[in-house]
Image (cartoon, rainbow, N blue to C red; front, side, top):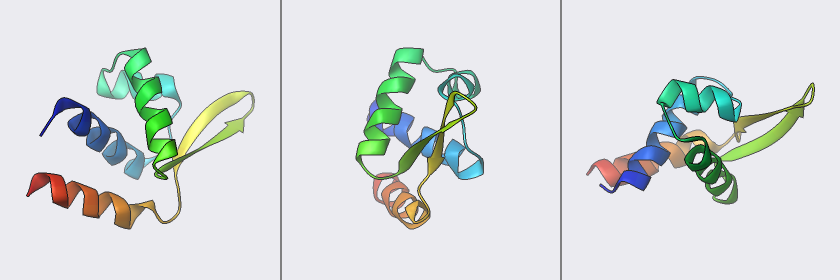
Length: 79
């Protein structure tokens, strides 16, 4: 499995637990900030995450029906 896919899976697994700001995600997964930004934007484009602004801070959340998509994606890459 290539490193970009692994990174996306790790990000999605982290979002299954809770919402994050980009900075929180960078610290939790020890990611480069630019890489985290790029992957978050891609996951928004793919329909896994949504962005909300709370008290002037961007927070990212799994979209409500993302759990099934995530499970299918992880299964397909781990097979």
